[in-house]
Each structure stands twice: as C-alpha cells, then as structure tokens.
Amino acid sequence: APPGLYRVEVAFFDPETQVRLPAVQTRSGDPIGDTLVLDYLVVDHIPTAPALPLDPPAQLDNKVTLLGTSMTHDDGTALAEHPAHPGEAVHVQVFWQTNGLMAVDYTAFGHLVGPDGQLATQHDQQPLAGFVPTTLWYPGQIFVDEYTLTIPAEATPGEYPLHMGMYDLATVTRLPINRNGEFVGDSVVVAVINVQ
Image (cartoon, rainbow, N blue to C red; front, side, top):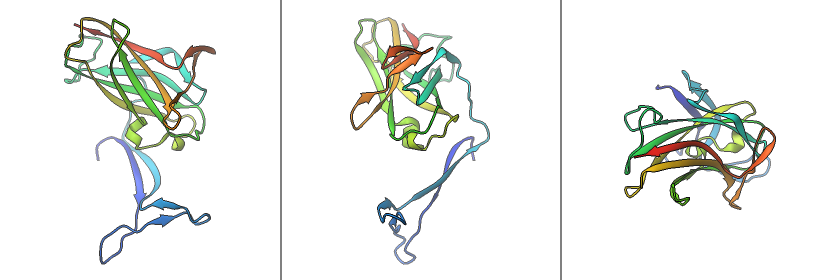
C-alpha cells in the first residue's frame, strides 16, 4: 500500500444478494448506516512539518492549530520558487494539529483574494475530504489536508493572499482565530501567491 492515512471499516452482507445490511447503535437503536468505522492507521510516513510554517501558529477557537502550509505547482515544484500563472492549479497542503476533542464536524476553507480585494477562487471542504471527520480527531494528532485552487484564467498579475480557517457548516459560523493569545479574526493569511 502507498504511504498515507487509511480507514479500517467493517460491514456485513446478505450472502444471497450481496447487499450491505444496515447497522444500529446497540444502546439507542439509532441507525448508523451500513458501514462501521473501526479505526484509522498510518502506513509509512506522513509529513508533519509544513514548508511554510506559521509563526506564531494560528489557534482556531483553541480547538485546532493551523501549523502552516506547503504549496506546489502541478509538476511538484515549490510555489515559492516560481510564480503561479492564470489558469494554473496550485496544490496546497495544510497542516492541522488537534488541541482537544471536537463535537462538530467542521468544514475548512481556503479563499484566494486578488489584488483588488475580491475573492478570486476558493476551496471549501471537510478536512481530508471528510475521510476523518473532525469529531474523530484526537488531541495532539497532526493531519495533512490537501486543497487545489485554480488561478482564474482572467487573473491580473499581482499578489494573492490565501486566507484559511474553519466553520460549522450547519450554522456557517467561522471559528475565531488567535495568534499568541490575540484575536485576529475568523481567517488567517497563510501565504501570499505571486501571480504573473
């Protein structure tokens, strides 16, 4: 198996139809779907240090810490080495570290803002594309999340700050962010992308 984070699941099938059987919580009788997640495991090594660390890191409501990012072009070269171009996809790895247990499955966002102050492009998703919901994150764990942002074809040259954060999808309420104990808003600039 290639290196990465894997999920261990169990499901039961009807032997005649091969249809998965629904499962329920033993105590409550509440349905839990047809697949039960048992655990997660890491195969080989997952990077835990970003190429572009935030100093100081950003604390999102003291629930999770945004440690920094790594950004590359399609060919894998570091974005810091060469500017991005209109129409190009930029690949962003975001490094999250859990501070405590979370009761909400948060959605993360990456918003790229143009030189004119307007949103140029965005990518919102549950971290790890929902593979490990934030309610299953344990204190101290580091997760590497991946986002792809496509620079608009009509983008003008200039500096494009990348704002990151998390929100509760049910209420669309963003988590407040502090750095060194000082409130800085509900998003943090993790990098500035030079578009030429």
